[in-house]
Image 1 (cartoon, helix red, strand yellow):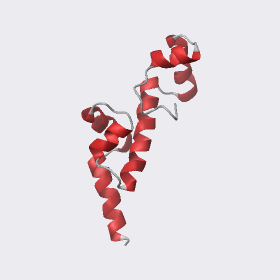
Image 2 (image 1 turned 180 degrees about the horizontal axis):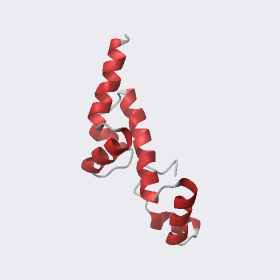
Image 3 (image 1 turned 90 degrees about the vertical axis):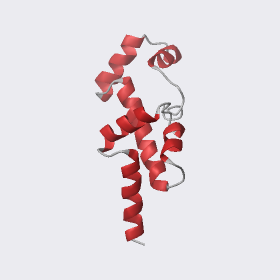
Length: 102
């Protein structure tokens, strides 16, 4: 998943790829990671989005798409849940901090 998190990926795709039933794979995520598949995927995407936002190389909308969110509103909602601030606020906080220290 580390290499494919930015693609449209589903529990169905993983179950087909690894030849597990969806329920078995779902149970494995829950028992091993204490997350649902979707929660894991969102956390992975948000972690990569935060890194991209820190690098200041692209806009929030472009970052959202780069890491695999197909809806900007979903990206905002999930990112804020993960980090406690919106992607724009995160970006602004990082860059305000950097400009103060330079």
